[in-house]
Image 1 (cartoon, rainbow, N blue to C red):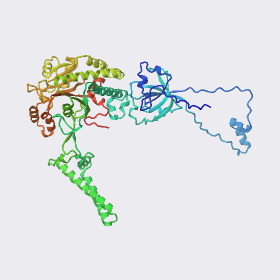
Image 2: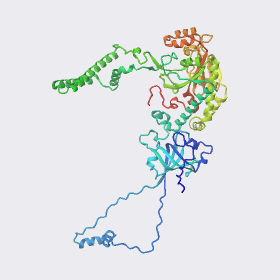
Image 3: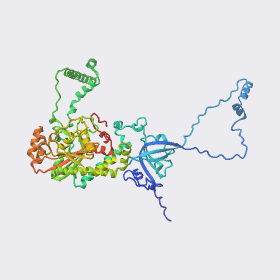
Image 4: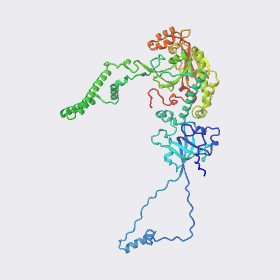
Length: 617
């Protein structure tokens, strides 16, 4: 007798994502046929509801069989008198009279009949973040009630069969749900994305939810493409990826505002408490009144001597309150003109036993790696305490730092030029759906700008030439004065790339006073071997230079700027022992995302923006 075989388990024909056991929507919707070839196949999809509506089903009344015999009412069902009493009010009154008014008619009962909910179909637009388009999903009310599944933001994991759309629209395929595997409900009253088309400024207040919007999801995919393209470019050109420290004792720029890293602030909790009291508007008089009450409580507990623990706690509370009043009085005297001692930090008692900062730039540390490994790059967060509310300013930004041994300024400019062309090409090739979205919704020039960057040659001019060109401009009045030794503003840069040359511009050989201490001085003694790459719309995205390899010149430059030699002793060692010519650059990723999306504020293109007066999550 042949043994019975177990029935084969039918698996979805579409390809699962390996680690999540579901089909990514991009594998359905971004096919050349839009998913038509998958019709009839089963799939499991997961995502979040972006929009929805409900269609009521038409109730079907079962046909009644024709009656072939007269209906006979059984005596057990209803009596004749009950029929008469309920249907003929006049007879009911007569019967009451004949019965002497004692006959009571059985009152009619109010029966509440609960109507069964009308069957319906919930039509959902579901997105899983893998692409711009969403999938239309049909869910019968027998599987999940509309109230549960339709709210925007609801998380669903649904098994079903792909079919031709039953509702006319732009979709060429939809999923008919057969099973709800998982349902993550939403509190509509508190969910911030329940309102449609929130401005990007409002979305910054809920950074943890904003990737669920189409705009921010597209931004993150382009951001990801830039990151991947960055690693691809440098890996293909023989660079090694190395990490540089986020915490450093070296002032890498010499003139940047830095974040200090310390644990000493924990010792200043009393000052924080005083500031909190002042901000809350609590007066010294009210605290003194509370001291009197606390003193009475201490006296009472002392007399009774019944609860020693309560007495000790009351005495400590009174002592702290007295100290607080004393400090508040001293602080108020200081505000009235009396000098008060400023609390100073002894960094020798700090965690690192010296003053440390969050790094502004990684090129100094990267240079030590280049002097041993050749060509290297690093990709990570950099920090600058710039108290600016500019649309292009962030306190925490992601930066690509590049350093190449045995190279000079011209080599670094060539590398930056090739890198920008490469990443722009990768965005065009890999993010077409997202670019089309920004083309329609944000900036109609997005594609043209990227294509032009890929195909055009960058204009190269010296800083002195740029100043001269701007001085000769007629019919245009700049707000800032144009003279040698002054930084070019966004207004100047915009005119050069958007109006004059109408393409990316590389400006090199800036005045030495505008650049960090480690850049190589040119033979004229006035300028340094530096360059900036300026792109249309976003301005400067790359800052590069050739490093000063001459020990004496570097030492003189540090002394001129008043930098602590001890702090940079390790950097000087690179000049003492086996010095090599090096050059490189730093590129900020966020302005490049602005360039590819057409947006105007860098705070909209990072997952969790950190800027002046803003760190919500």
